[in-house]
Image (cartoon, rainbow, N blue to C red; front, side):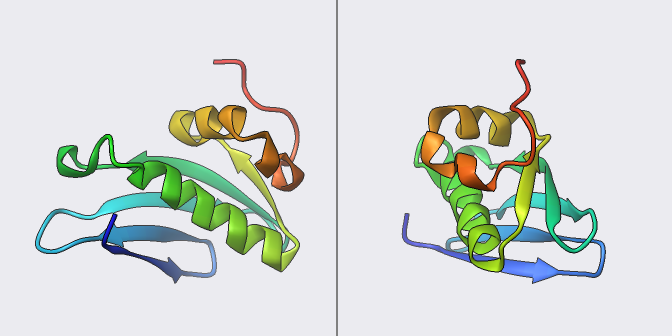
Length: 101
């Protein structure tokens, strides 16, 4: 991974974006629920970045940011939910239980 992850936020949500060169961007979107909770609702990684850990890095960046801000995450997105299952070290920022599916 040689690209950079950026965060764009609005009052109601935001997007983490990974860009590398002229390729289409990888993105992970979230919604804000109050001051201390975000819901990761979608992750999209173009074919050119698949298998390189880009999606995991997007989730990891959100975990780092949320942890630093004292917030919690609900990983509604199936990809993000699966990553939380694989990374128990992130469970301190979970709000509630992981989905079974």
